[in-house]
Length: 165
Length: 464
Image (cartoon, rainbow over all chains, first blue to last red; front, side, top):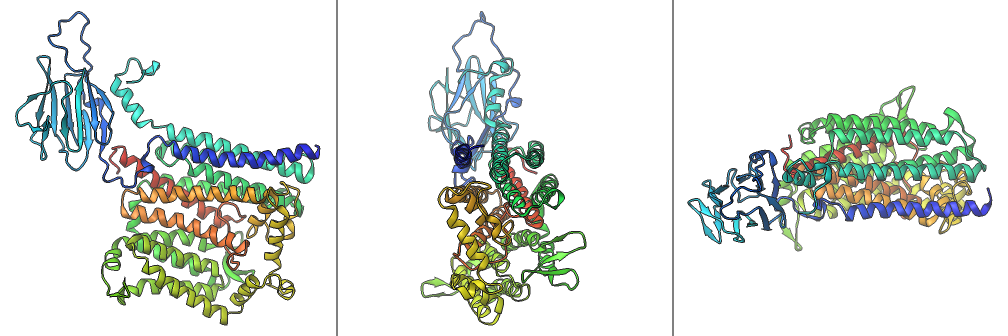
């Protein structure tokens, strides 16, 4: 093996060593979870969607009469998982800190069984399940089951969501 | 919603969402790719060593690279089962460091004409395998790090026992002036290496309970809140132990390592920088007195400050090794002589204490900085785990374990590059030495376990 080949190989080795270093740095940066960029993990509420808690998927037959056009998605507009869209396939969705909830919101202001979103004659209705800190539709605290129109902010704890078609 | 994955069409969209949120194997896949990358670099290094030193490839390197690959992948598979959310970067970084160490030791074997079971590289490989098996055992057995907090006084006893074990007559062995080894007939090892883990566990467990009194009270004087006299007890005890190590085991590095670990954990637990002033003053005073009255410490200081004096260079226990190491760095220059082309064998103990000088000679400044970057990345991951830790014990433990490695790297590389006096510690993961490898791989296992707990809890799972 000639000196030149060996020199190129040695140079290549140093290059590949640095490529490894930069690969690790790149992986750090693009860490999908993003947990490692947050300083405090206590302050950030945790939201997960629990499919097991939703009722079996309800697919309306194409020719079935639908009286209004009910909202199909729930979009989180503020809070930890801002931008998350949850499809409303079933005719009810429970919200709370409990792992059994359809939409799990973990922060200090959410009760274990906080609220329930229910399809009622083609309209989504939210019912507060006597939560400690309340459920707000359009900044009004709800005490009785209240219809939720499209694009109306509903806030639970530090999370705000709205229904969209 | 983005387009659903085609093979998930018959699941509900929420299930797909859940999958996308959790992505359970994403981290492990990233880890697998990086481990393979590290293996490729290791094999490349071994091949270059053979090509550079002997001009042809030797079959021994296949065993070395495959051996490391298989055993690291075993740990990776174990993580897939028992710690799926563990940090994906730690294992590849450590694998590469370990592999580079084996390559360099193999290169020194060629220089020293050692083959077969005589060769240090083979022994290093066997020790790596043992260390990783121990690491797997740790990560499988320790499912919840909080359990470790319960046994903090047991860790204290174990730590002190291991620390003082080399002083026991008949089994304690003095090598190169330092009494750090224990010889049990077949194997000799440095119990202090394992002891540092036990002490990190004890310090973390102890400071979680004691930190309130350590951080709250004390009189203000000169604009600083000074600790109360009775709160100085623990730091004083640890200082005494460190001084005992310095005097009786004759090793400044170990002494500095334990004391530094305690100081940093005290600072992290209480947030009071005054502990550094108190502790640094105590250790500085101790080291100064030791340098006056203990000949070996004095010798180390002279060899450090006056290395190039011919009298010091020629003296027994003088600066010969240090200066040869520096000559090695110098002849390596910026890009090094290349694997197999330098003369790293000239330096005594080139495969253990001075492996950094050997790597510096053959990989140059560029290579050494890559290695230091790897340490830096490893340490930054460890500190990150500490910052994100779920509970105080976990945070302190992650910081403590990471800092032990950071301080050890500083003490060793600082010594070899003549920033501080030379001491007898080993470069983590790189240097030849079984106890050091086992200890550092246990630290890796504990950090992986802690990082898994951090993510696991964040993702809404109920950690046991």
